[in-house]
Length: 216
Length: 270
Image (cartoon, rainbow over all chains, first blue to last red; front, side, top):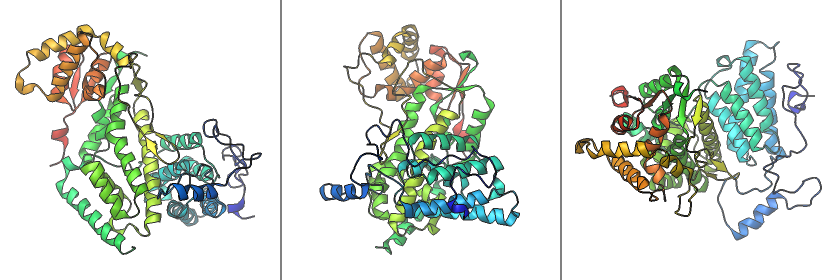
């Protein structure tokens, strides 16, 4: 069985049963399911059909598009499975340094790809993924200790769940922040500090606009 | 818990921790690290929502709605002003600058929203988690409401109060400090006109109306006299650190709290 396909409840890589977050068939979130039917027993309109119906009445360009039953779809999930496999391998104690590092870098690549390609993410998925990307940035595996790598693995595991609750997102983000290195936070106050930097940023946006026009 | 041991940090210290200028950022971080136990007034959370998180939410909304990067930039510039525009520019810079893969827009938009969702969620956690305690003596429930999202849109709205809102705990809190307010009015009455700022004038007016048992709190009065609320809350602590010298230098004497300036102008690199 490949690493990617192994269930999250099994932990062959570290032998740490209980540290990996289990992967239930569906989730009950006290807050989120209050207005949602039990998906095991109730016939409901699939999110995709709902979107089509809504689109006829209320055109919207919103990316995450009001998917009342937003669930990570299988094709999208495969990217996250791959990411989970790589970060799990990056924790293998018997791997060579180069291999561990490559696994970590590939994990980052998969997360990056997921942030651009995965259409079925809910906002809770995006919160976790964005936090991971903001924490990892251009860093290498050597910038992180084993504990935070395990937290990255757990976070990636939550990311591949079809549904992620607000509580899941909060818990994972709190865990990541607790073990954080430096996280990218958007700065303020630039106008008061560096006029030349402001000019550079103005030019950057101009150039990106030009670049974006080539796609239209 | 002895409140008297706490160093209160003004809202601006949190903002300076995110300053673009490295010396300012480092100095603000040092204040947080070297003054334990630290605290903020819960009212600072209201200001943070208004001054920082609202900007992030605007970026999120405009990027989400725009069908091209150019349109997103225009929407952000026109509706969010220069500050929001520069926040977007800095985000693009952090993500790779001119090398950022802006095409196809649908993918870039997805990625930008991923970062923004995380920024909004994390910034609230960061603000709350970066200090040792949050004091909310005026029991304002609005202050402690985190930004919310419905899975698609964020909101960090601080609703305007109406005259019908007679149960506002801030009003009761102010009434419990009538003597302080009276002293403040007397101090401000003899203040040199060159030292009188617009905020001090507003604070004086609100204090005077509160003493007369009028109701000056409808609308967004709280937001306009934030320094007064933070100053009153800081009375219970050891010291208040803030860069708002003009206001706190005057109010601290009248209200009876110790004020220490964070000298941002001299720290800022030229």
